[in-house]
Length: 301
Image (cartoon, rainbow, N blue to C red):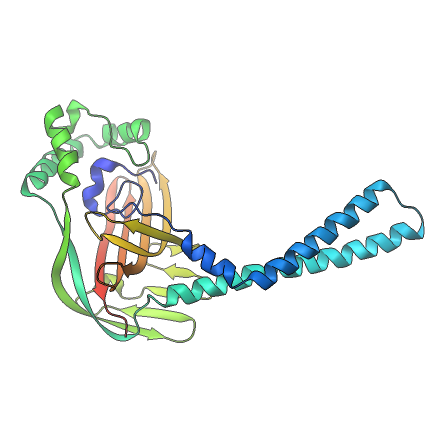
């Protein structure tokens, strides 16, 4: 789903949303250090495979061909074996690193919320009223003009003057994240699965499941796969942090349907606390069906 920077007030997480962390390579280096043995064996097998391939290309005949074919099959087997072992080692280490951030048992949490300047909220309301009266134009305008990480070019149909639109974009970056309440998150877990129960305070987290073996997050919107390491040196919302993020995006602009889900978990560098930042939205025929956004801070026991 293409993100529109002028709608960042809806607490998007990445690519035009609330947080724009850079990819962190440090975690990958940690994983690589723990798999040196597999990599060395992998390199030797790969070199042997290449050497046998070069020999066969130079030409062999009769029984030599059969012998070399048998050797090639044997080498290919071990090559695939060590590729699988290397991937398994890396995945295991990633599961361990993600597990270090997850809450366990009964966890007291601070419920956080974004706060915007009053002037921004007033301008945002004007913009929303204007585009809601012309939804088809709005969707076509997004389709024709939206670029990742960039605001939409100005149009008088926004219901704002050009100066007001510039002010709107400027004030959107003045958001702050502050505590708005307390909550309790119950986490059922075994060695692999974590299941959340947010109770009455955090109902949007109830039913969320994290599987550390498959590295998936199951939400009411979609099953999120392939977490990526994320790091930010600072920003108006979470500040400096490191962690892991899952994303899911699927849309059909022509029909006005779309699903956009992000789940970010990590560590706040300044305070050392853990956090979860979960956002999900679904639209059908240009009408919002569901929209959730949760940010919690907590201390891992």
